[in-house]
Length: 85
Image 1 (tube, helix red, strand yellow):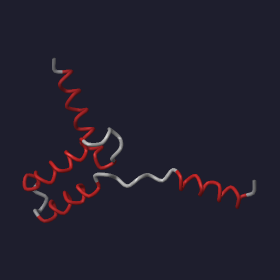
Image 2 (cartoon, rainbow, N blue to C red):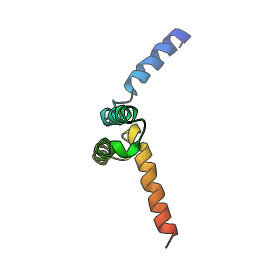
Image 3 (cartoon, rainbow, N blue to C red):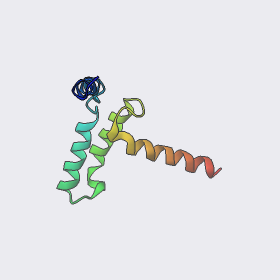
């Protein structure tokens, strides 16, 4: 296989492996808009943060990149709970 064929072969597989659109991207963008509009005062954006949490709960772990922070937060809480017993 020459370089040109190899490049086409790689492109074909890259297309097949393209990630799907993040299902919670819209909610993540809403959080950013809210934070910017409220001088990054998180307490003023609890409603939109809750909407993202609801979205994240609808999908399996690892499906949404924007949910990875919540997933990590939950793992840390669980670890603290287990180690404090």
